[in-house]
Image (cartoon, rainbow over all chains, first blue to last red; front, side, top):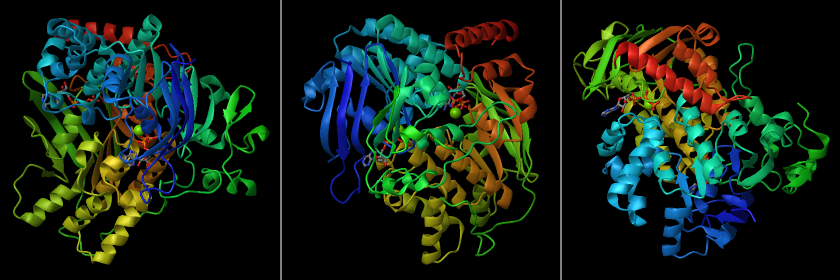
Length: 321
Length: 295
Ligand SMILES: Nc1ncnc2c1ncn2[C@@H]1O[C@H](COP(=O)(O)OP(=O)(O)OP(=O)(O)O)[C@@H](O)[C@H]1O
Ligand SMILES: Nc1ncnc2c1ncn2[C@@H]1O[C@H](COP(=O)(O)OP(=O)(O)OP(=O)(O)O)[C@@H](O)[C@H]1O
Ligand SMILES: [Mg+2]
Ligand SMILES: [Mg+2]
């Protein structure tokens, strides 16, 4: 049994507010000590999926399917259970650090609140917080404890948020684009901390990113999402060597490359599917270079292709580019 | 999303626009917070319609520099000139103030904070048009649709409040809003960082089109060196508030001179990437710098 199991999770906004579900039958697993990547287009549901693991769902949404952490169903948990889950087992680094910290409270209070709530003595909690700030590379950690969020640059605040997530020594870390706001050297430093932690404590990690190279460097397996569904999953190396879904291939082609003779990134034509649109067939069909009539009839299911899974009717033919 | 680029100015009444030279010159800009020199003697020039990248590690002063340019932070010293005119010189009237605000637009690093949580997306963009252009209601409505469409947002997103949008959707709203003002210089502070690569590629295409057709200059703050390589012509590398290296982007990225620039390039994730080693190299460099300059 994997530590995190999401089974057929469907999240639907109330009638009239969207034409299709935000998440549509999403299943994914993160084992103990495993790093699992979640990539996909903007608005495809990555953050909503992460937040569901903490029992946080959009207001008024209808939910079906299951989210289990350590075998226990999160969606059926009462408030007190959810609080303890968030304090002890699952921590999340939110995508927008400024939106996830209270601007009126000192960083020290923010960092120690979880520990203090779980019964740690204030002095011990403070010492631990300083250690963590040091570990994520904040200079003058003692001083930082007394400062307010607006005194920090975007990347520094992101590291504060990461330190807060690590404070409770969680078994599962949900990292929603944790390094997007960081420069590459700081990113490397933060990733080094996260992977060390994983090796030492067996922390599982669900890692949302749009940087495929980073996903490949950090993750054992990667899920690719499009319009609320998982459209492909396989090992990170396999994803690069042989993407199975045309959307994944499109993502690879749109990645800007650093090497001097690389051409400019090649965008996927068309625009992402809005929540107001509910295409009958494959949601990617309108942008797909190898679309066929059957793609417009019903959405393809996720099927196995060697070691990968992809939701494409033409998965066996390979991608023609 | 359409590739075409249209502008409101030229066709309709443009409140107080002037077609003068729009070279941006920054000389010896300084800003300290408490005792800490966040920006310490930064100088650069952005030619009209040029594209300049600012790269450097977290906390090196990129956002503070950008905020000084748009007047959100007042510099301790130094000068910021557009077309030879000091940005901080007093304005004579509202039209002049508006024109000056309009000439430089910024897309912020934290789109969540820069968007009013109570205002739906459509109105947030419309507000800018109302402020800067004399348009009829129908013209404004049409222009809003067009601007949102350029960044890949449709009817549903137009009617949404920021909190009902994903991170990347919010960032695109912020880009559409800045473009609405048709600035001479567009400052993008990590503006494509939260976008997945396929949308990022579209936005980069869109920006390149706007630059080509409308001659807007870009100041592109980013930590993504691959993006910087494709969207900028020149680049400055900041470290601890100072420029440590500057030059044509291709040269700096292929033959970096400064150790720090080399470390930046080494840090880009790729096959065989070893974060622990990069972290160690970085600490070593910090010790070296700490030992020699004493800060
Ligand atoms: N609280 C909410 N109420 C209504 N709609 C929402 C809410 N949160 C998210 N959505 C919508 O659900 C969809 C998925 O959003 P989500 O934030 O999960 O996207 P994402 O994959 O994380 O995208 P990004 O890469 O841009 O962060 C989007 O269309 C978004 O507008
Ligand atoms: N209002 C403020 N009060 C005190 N210190 C500040 C303030 N704003 C910024 N600083 C400090 O100034 C330095 C530069 O911050 P700035 O936001 O310019 O960095 P940055 O290069 O944009 O970093 P990032 O890549 O993390 O966004 C940092 O050390 C930061 O802590
Ligand atoms: Mg998100
Ligand atoms: Mg910044």
